[in-house]
Length: 304
Image (tube, rainbow, N blue to C red; front, side, top):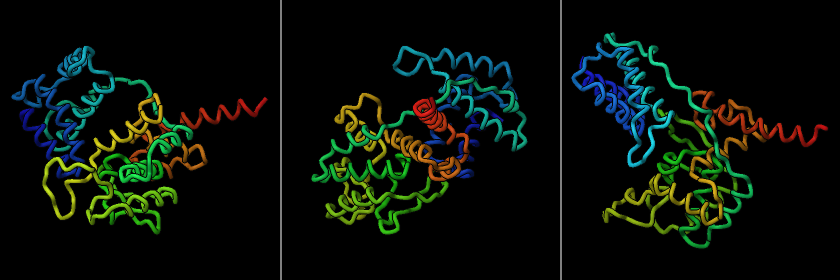
């Protein structure tokens, strides 16, 4: 099987076989197309050897980032190799002769650094917003919902008005890998959502709307007005800047803050894993070093 055919077959499997997200498939395609250009598209997958992978790793290590004077960082190099291993594993599963995926060793990367917000930083962001204005009411509801639920930015963007039960204060969300989970909303977030929705004079489907309609096309359900992830990220970033925060703040920062506060307040890690929608508890364990640090501070403060 030619490499280009193997990549097409694998990407198709990811999309329609494993129901992976559009973004995941796009990322896999980006990483694998780089390998295809290096190895040549007419290369047969049976000719993928440990020597070829060694040369490819050297190539990645020397590849400059687009528009920047630096090379690909270790984490990005790892993403390329993870994609390649996934494709080889798929080929092996389908009895196609090629290099065993276990032959590709992943580079060791530094421990992931998680940025969280202190309570006073959160309050500063909330105070920055004028809730009397429609955009302010929307942004307050948006921030409180992110902080209350730990939603990913794509999950927030995809929410419709009918999805969110403001009475039971819970709703179902479809996360990564089409995995469903139940999330819960605080009373505070519910109130800000009600305030925002009460200012709306439309019957549009999306929970959060953008002010602009760049397409100049109006639909019955207002889908063209749905607030997109990039716009949500920009809103959060601008609010943080206006609040005087010097650190980089994204919707994922609020997700990190949500998880960290749960753990610091005594929630067990399995429950936090479920609320975040992590497939593996290993992913959730990135937060434990933060809570361990807090325990150390308490120990030093009270144990003499």
